[in-house]
Length: 75
Image 1 (cartoon, rainbow, N blue to C red):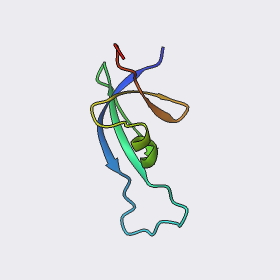
Image 2: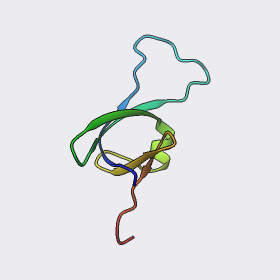
Image 3: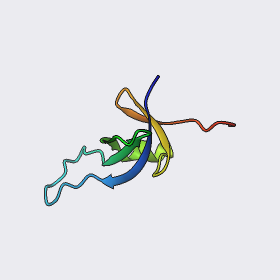
Image 4: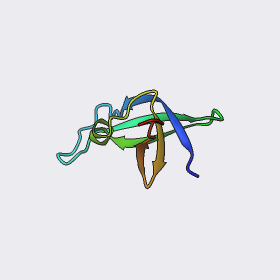
């Protein structure tokens, strides 16, 4: 069974004063917590997060390098 996480924060990946290349894909850093309280973070494409409608407080699974929103019961 896959571990389920709750998203606790989403932060823009900051490059400081470095220039970004023309093919740069904007990324965010997602922090999340397991039911047991273990915390971790992963980078995800910003557009992917918007497209999947994933935000703070959502429950997600992390598989194959991507976050996937957990389906809510009763839907």
